[in-house]
Image (cartoon, rainbow, N blue to C red):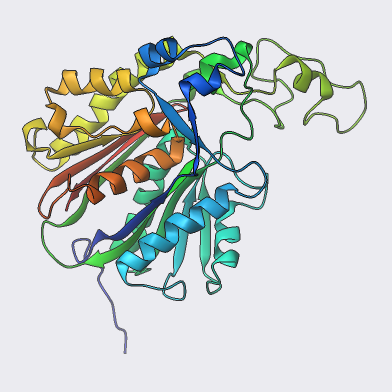
Length: 358
């Protein structure tokens, strides 16, 4: 007898059953950074809105250990244990190892079963991309308890010298996590997610080395050793010259971000027959307070409709959205029935949004 099972796309929605975040105890104010470079509190706040950031312990804390802290809180709040988790999606640009990814390290250190673990390398958009991937698995009934993590340890790779101050003053360390579960409640949970990319200007916000590109895509090309094989990964000259450090064309990134941020937010609203006035809380990626404020103005949102915490934590890339989401919920900014929009823009360029009915 042939039995055909039909999958109903509207059978399940994903809901955030629990969330948590972790930031290191080491606080570095803008004034603290003046010990390492020519800068000032006024200079940093004027350009970014950042007052302080957290840096992980240099040797005792890693991207994975911070993720574990956030994940444990999220699982406790969701009422699940490590044994209940059946898939991991881990977003980061600062993995413990070049390979393997942090997902498997998290699985090992938390004593989970031999479940699937997927790492997402989409930088500032990484968490929203990871959430979207997990959402598809929940909707299809493939998994029931998915741990979605965004975690970053930027401080290990930053150059705290004046030559790199445009980049190094912006970033901080931390982690955020959510547990995604299915719900059959109508009009609750993740309503839709929207993902985009455009690699035309990939090099204006990037960390080129180490890599296997052999300078193929770069205009300025530090020399590699003259040898038949190998030697194309990382050289002493690249380290000494600063070529191996993260690079960002700030004004160009700003111009792109203030276009794509509102676009992807409006796309999510339109897909659900909603408008800007329906948003109870927008949680943008904490890239730069000036970007968030500009997007807020373009969308006609009030201060109460937008949550920012970059002032305290800096830009934690893939961790910024889950940290902000969790903190907003903890202080009572999110209530049952609220319409919450997550939006992110970052290196690649990639940008994404998720619309959630709480």
